[in-house]
Image 1: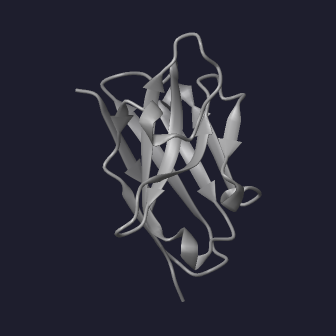
Image 2: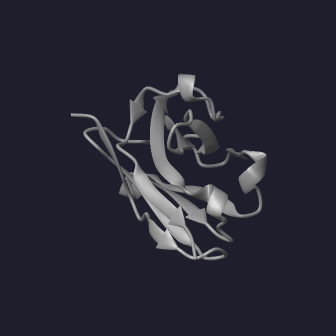
Length: 127
């Protein structure tokens, strides 16, 4: 079984922080690019951030630059999304996804490019 499981979501006040984790089971993430995506109710899923398989290449959408940081620990088979200075508009279900790129060190935030998806973690930013 190939699974991705998100954790670390919850309720936080505006300006607060959360750290999401994406843990893989059934496969190792060493050769996978990982993306984080969000989906608000009634809206399409959209990219947030991604990280290449080596961890040296990262990308962020403009709305989260300077606030979110993606990282990976291949030894733990886990990818993280540190979310700081959270805003109400960040509220959504956050999904992690993986794409096998044995020879590709970059990443992208397009939904179409990913093969495996987690079930999502709810993030709510509210007073």
